[in-house]
Amino acid sequence: MQQRRLGNTGLTVTEVGFGGIPLTRLGLEEGAELVRQAVGLGFRYFDTANLYGDSEVKMGLGLMGLREQVALATKTRARDGDTAARHLEKSLQDLRTDWIDLYQLHNLSEAGGLERVLAPDGAWPMLERAREQGMIRALGFSSHNPDQARAAINSGLFASVQFAFNFVEHDSYQRVFSAGLARGMGLIAMKPLGGGLLQRADLCFRFLQAHPEVVPIPGIQSLAEAQEIRDLYENRRPLSQQDQQDMRAIRAELGERFCHRCEYCLPCEQGVAIPNVMLFQTQQRRFSPEMIKNISSRAMATVENCIECGQCAERCPYDLPIPQMMRELYQQYEQFLAQHGLS
Image 1 (spheres, rainbow, N blue to C red):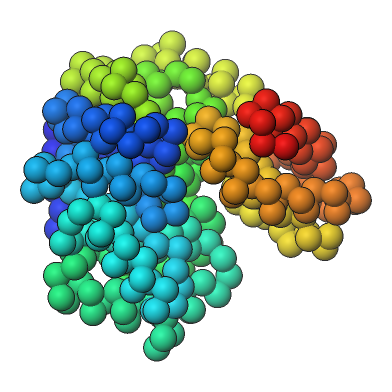
Image 2: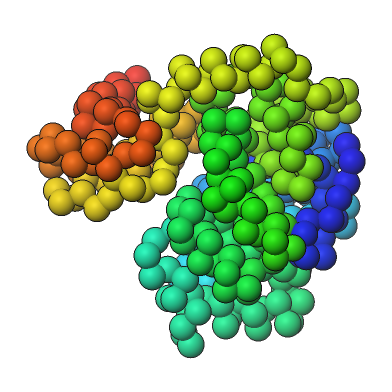
């Protein structure tokens, strides 16, 4: 795989990275061995987060003796300095490293989040000190909200932006990535396969190869997946007319039921956590059953508050039948828990 500079982070990474969420589905040694195998295949950029269960532990074990060969990214959901300091210390310990190449503020999507981070007791001053001390090489952020992402980009403080980008959610390029590119930021694409909803990996990565300034980080949970992605980059070809036709067909098929996480449906006057409930569409393909219950239970409990007023559906720019989807996803969630003995 080719390597490239990740914007103005100062880092050199492979043109596609290794996303660490699916490591939570694997045993300790199995996950560590997959990381080692990925390095052997040529992956040189690894992404995880302290929120991803034991992903950091497995990644750290797998990178023992290989740390100097890779760029390592992780994240903190903290907004205050004290919590960010604890998260950084634990990440360094779990990843078995003295430094993080790219440390990111995780899901900087909420209103007021940037202001909280930049406050005197916020995460940013603490992380800047950690960077000056050599514990962090570069600071970035991830987001699911285009408005909040643009605000963070326009602050001029961050070296990278991570946002969902795939051939269905392609409008994020103009809404987010173009602003980051203008500032020379590193551009990182999460959910290159739509969080598991897009089954045609060949189409997904050929689409992304047409945007070489963007580094995708697909979640990888097997050697076969890592090899398939490696092969798609080593034997690349441009999108054909048939590929374009297939992508249009998939967009049309998913368009009626695909949540783009723009959050225009909010606020819900009844307190239904609509975007978080919608995440179950992809979570069941990415996380372990126990982790899904842990991160979804609170959001799913809000579904019973829905009175089907329809205001969310009226505000949705993608015309999703949101109340109906809330009911269906809740039923799927209950069935999922029962199937795995977690009811």
